[in-house]
Image (cartoon, rainbow, N blue to C red):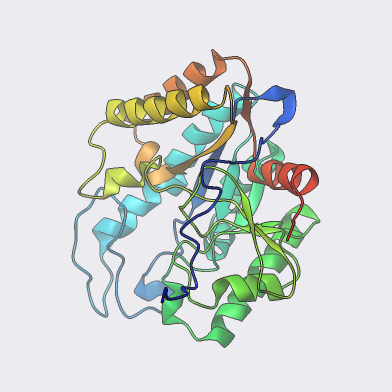
Length: 302
């Protein structure tokens, strides 16, 4: 007898809905800028160790002490990298999404304010850039509420989406219980949004991506130079654009200022944007726009 799993391995099968994006677009492309610098593991934040993840510095965790090398590697993103990312989008009058780690926004409000002014939407990315499975349910709930209040203070409206990045088993339920969010992005399992049930109300999910993501510059199996990133993004875009002639798709591209914002890599972002703009029927948009479109045109059905 087949065992029932609390997972969905089937999805849309070979019959995905027709996304009918605005302008009859064949593909909806969303760029997410991860605003994390300053909120990573650091004894200055009350943690028991230093950060080790996603930078150009390869280090082991320093227990109970600061690691100045990784701290300054992160600072490059907040001091320099963000301004390069912002310029790439605003020079072309394009919008992106900010995956906002709350504490990082408090430490560095300047680039964040520039992104809000440019029309970027805010998707809370946790209050700290940590593994939320290490927190109690009570602590995680408090972090979610702090993120909601921060976005209200910054924009005048509550956030529609949430992306923990390293969620706990409780994250989605806590997000739904907060009664602020239309969607979350804590999955990597589809090229289209979809609805989930089994909670107090139906909930929308917008899949994120770790392959079309510059975090692979900071992972051993990933990109080495800007050209690698451009080629992989171009190949992914080309294939989804081709499929989009019959079945329009969504593509998410994750960016980190401390990685892609380096001089030897930022040119790849300019090339990517220009390449996409050469094509007709491409919708480069923020994440809230995708979610609201889907909720209106593809509402939940049993």
